[in-house]
Structure formats: structure tokens, C-alpha cells
Image (cartoon, rainbow over all chains, first blue to last red; front, side, top):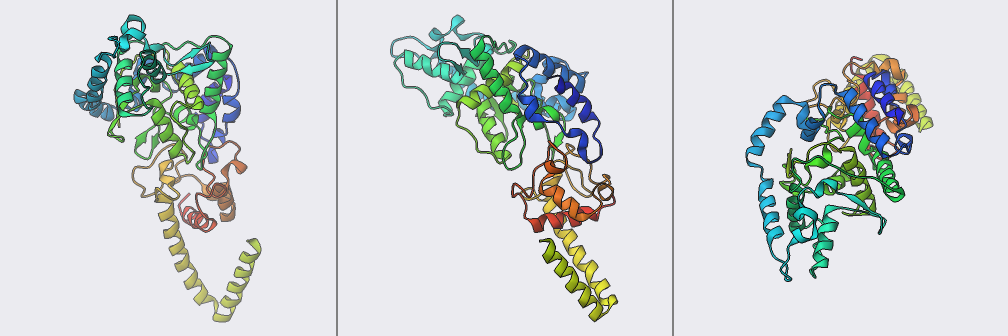
Length: 287
Length: 127
């Protein structure tokens, strides 16, 4: 992963025909140095790319790179349309199950601060568990049918549950062999070129963060997990991090995977871990 | 493909000899201008070349800045021939390993003819 730092130097030297861009991304994504070192390398890389930007500012995504857009953002969040979804989620969260309990009964501290550590790796099942999976298992424990992933009611519930960690830093743990394996798989997926356009996630969100793709500023990997579920004007609705993965896959001409698939969960696990330390702000607002 | 091109060139050359050099000289630039216009249209179109997503091109609005600025990049000096530029567009990674650029031909984003038109357009730029 030292190579990541070389990428920083290389990208700044855009030579003739982009020869300096010639980084072996596949190799970079499959170089296993462990989660801690990977996080350190990424944070260092972004620090070198944007020396004046504080870690917390990454929570703003592409808005951190344009004062004009940031101003628009500040106006937009005066009334974030996502707050409607949040209140729907709150109502669902507070509604009593047939047994008289509520979702809060499934979580420590009634759910406050819990989502900051999601997704987490369950050593017993050998799986990455997302907020939506946990909300569904809470339902099943209380004799209710699971909600459909990606459904409006699940998104609203997820939004409220995650918002109970607002203001707290992302705090994902990757400990143990199985967890590290899931993390490394997510990382390899992040660097894997795919689709008709042959781009990896890293192509845009690491190499070209802060640059323009047409009129859009590309957001950096750091901080992306901290504002989901988020309201996107492009969606006209609140939706999840994994929904965004599907959109990215489609954009590069790759086959989108199912929500909550192993690959997407591992990807979410890797990306969220890299955002450790950045404060959660849900529902976010994005163009 | 190369053979057919050679045949076309041979035919054109013969025809030019037959009709006379002046006529051919007048006819060729006109066709080329149309090719350049068609290539520009493909380069600007979001559902075709969409070059503007990543590159600045003269007259292009809201261009990206991810790739080199094609308004100034000395393409002719880099690629020497237009055919080599077409080969590059077909599969950039073959020319520059791991480059972050779509394989327009290999992944069938554009047809060979469309890539030739884009190359005609790019070749007409200052660089």
C-alpha cells in the first residue's frame, strides 16, 4: 500500500498521454497490508492531496471542494427533504411490536450510538452485518416479518436508527481472521475495474477526488459512509449507501449486484472502516 | 481492414489522376470537414464518446478535468499518425498499461468508424 502514496505523486505529474496515471490498480487493491495500515495509507494519501482539509470536512463530500456549492448546500439543508423520511422512520421505531417491545429493545442504549459501529463482522455467522440486516433480525426476534431491503419502510427505519449516532465518529472494528478477510475482499472489490467503461471505485473516488466529471465534483472515499442513508436530489428521495453502489455500477456499465449481497456488504465494510473518525450526519443531503 | 483502406486509397489516387488533381484537392477537405463535425458530435455526446466527461475540448461546455486537456495536449506529436490514435482509442490500456480510460473499441462503446471520426476531429485540433 505504499504504492498509494506513489499514486499521489504520480497523479500530480500528469505527463504526456497520461503515462503517469499508469497505476496497477488491481495489484494495489490486492496488496494485503491489514486494515490498520490500509486506513493509515488512505488518510495519509488524502492528507497529501488536500493538505488544508481537516478530517471532519470530508463529511461534506464534494461540497468540501467548492465554496459556491457549499453555500447552496447550506441553503438546501435548512429544509432537508430527507427529514420527512427521518420522521417516518422515527414513528416506525417508536411503534410497539405485538409483544409490547420496540426496536430499541434490540440494541444497547436503546440504539443510541450503535450504528456508528455498523457494519460489523459477526464471528459466529462469518458475515458482515449491516444496519438493515440487524433491523430485520430484530423484527424476526419479535415475531415480525422482515422488511424488504430497499423498501421505503426499511429505508426510513434505517435512516432513523443511523441518525441515533449523529455527531458520533464512524467506529468500525475489523478484528479477527474472518473480519480481515471480509475487509480485504471489500478492498479488492473497490479497486477492481469493471463494466463497459472499465472503471473501479478507486479510479474516481481516490485518484480523481475533488476533480470534475462534467459539472459534478467527484467525492472522496473518505466520509462517504458517514452521510448514508442520504437524500439525493438526483433520486428525489432518501436511499442507502448500497443503492449508490448500484448506481455507480450501472454508470460504468457493470451489472449491479443485489442489495445486501456479500460483495456489497464487504465493500460497505471496507469503505466504512476507512471513514473511521468522521462524524455521522444522517440523513445527508447530496446533489 | 488495412487492405481495404489501401484499396480505397489506390482507387482515390487513380480517380484523382483521372479527374485531375485540383478536383480531388477541393473534394477531400469538404469530406474531411464533415468527418470532423461528425467526430466532434460523437466526442461531445453523453451517450457516445462523452469525451467531455473527463477532458476539456475547445467549445465544450461543463467539461471535466480528470484527463489531460485535449485543447492543448500535443496529440500529433504523441501519436504520430491518426491510425495510431484510433488504435489507442480502441484499447488505451494496450498502449499505456492500467490507464484510467474506457476501451472504446474493445468494449464496444464506439464502432471503428465512429473512432475514426473522433480521431479526425481530434487531429483537427491545435495540439
